[in-house]
Structure formats: C-alpha cells, structure tokens
Length: 143
Image (cartoon, rainbow, N blue to C red; front, top):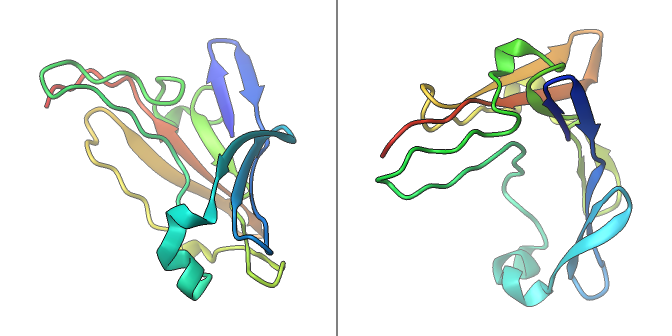
C-alpha cells in the first residue's frame, strides 16, 4: 500500500498469513506482526478452509449527521500514484501455498458514494501481474 501526502510518498508492505496447523491468521506491516486473529473467529472458513473473495482498498466512517473524512490521501484516483492512495501487486496465496494473480476481468470495484470517494483499477496489458487499485477522495459527504 502506498499513501502519498503532498510531496511525500509512504510505502508499506502488508501481508496476511495463516498458520496452517492452527488456522490462526497474522497480519504484518513491513515484516512486523501487528495483528492476530484466532481461527475461532472464522468458523465458516475452518469448515471449508477457503474464502469466497478477497478485497483491497480503503474504508472510512463518520456518523450520518457529520461530514465524512477523506479516504486514503484525500486525492482522487485519477490524480495517479504520486497523489492517490493505492494498493499494488494484488495477489492471493492459495491453500497449497501457490501464488494466484487475479485476472483483470474478475476484479470488481465497489464504490458507495462516488461524490466523495472513487476507485480505479490500473493494469498493464503486457504485465498482467502488476495490478493496482487507486482509491480515495476528499470526503465531505453527509449521510
């Protein structure tokens, strides 16, 4: 994930990993464990040992009577990687350890309020493994 603020850009390597013996999940940023979820929280996954989808992007919250905050860097995805927040190298690790690169046509964008926030899929035809989702916006919506 990269977040750009004014003239500074900050990059973070984020990783989810499952303990294949216990089924627990670990979340790391820049190779430092920062989150842990026991397998008991994912009962439906334990039964099938699978997820039906994966998601990347941003999320914000505000009470319905208050203006919504900026998402990502507060810039629109159309402003590109020097200003917009983005997640790159979209991949999943399958149960057997193989890396899976989602096909471009299978990646769907979900935007709840395009007046405040947007998302944009960016990929190169000759490098289909280099997919990125640019996301964000200034916020300011009520309701």
